[in-house]
Amino acid sequence: MTQLLKACANSREPILREISQGLLDRRLFKCIEGTSERALLKEYERRLSVANLDPEFFFAEDKPSDLPYKPYDPYEENQDSLILVEDQTGKPRDLAALSEPVAQLSKTYGNFRLYFPEIIRQNSEQKANKNGNENN
Image 1 (cartoon, rainbow, N blue to C red):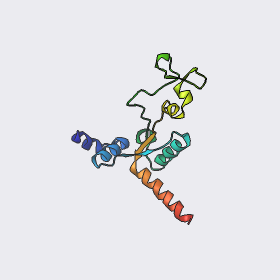
Image 2: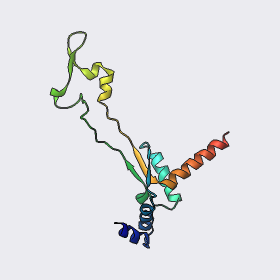
Image 3: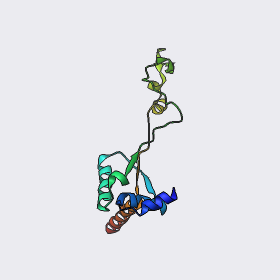
Image 4: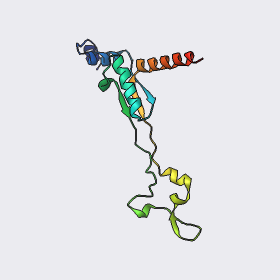
């Protein structure tokens, strides 16, 4: 594998060369927690373009969605899985309708991660520090 990366690091193809050199030199993509806001994604794509890095190859987004358990879903078609309790009038009601903490358990939460070369993050931090110093 190393020999392949070394060969690719000498390629005439700039994208293949940059990615191979990055792997060989341990300049791996960095991850930040982000949001899926289109404006933020466009901003990182713009920063990559300014750095002459093609966003198609040097930018990735990921939203892990695997859960270690099946979340409680009060709207599931299979009504056998509902947890019914009696309300104050004695009528059976879904537990999620009566308890805010249980209702929160039925919501799906996820992380949104952005991956790109570290130089993009460093440039972002430098600009943020520079802007912060100008405001002082």
